[in-house]
Amino acid sequence: MTRRRALTAGIATKIGNHSFRATGITTYLSNGGRLEIAQAMANHESARTTGLYDRRDDQVNLDEVERIVI
Image (cartoon, rainbow, N blue to C red; front, side, top):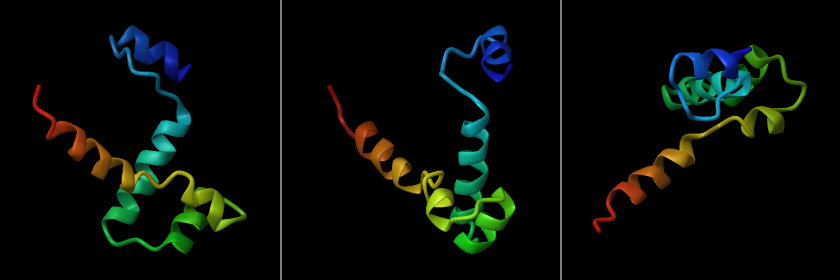
């Protein structure tokens, strides 16, 4: 349903429910949240699972890519 609605809205990026989970967890952690609390909010049994949704390192990679000038 999420992908269909995104396409209807003209969003070509592959998106799904897990995209929203990752955004929420990453935003929470970026603003000083603790992994254990994010784990409880996501209802994960393991902090390792919650850590898979942490995209803070991805932003560093995107910043590096944007510095490339062709």
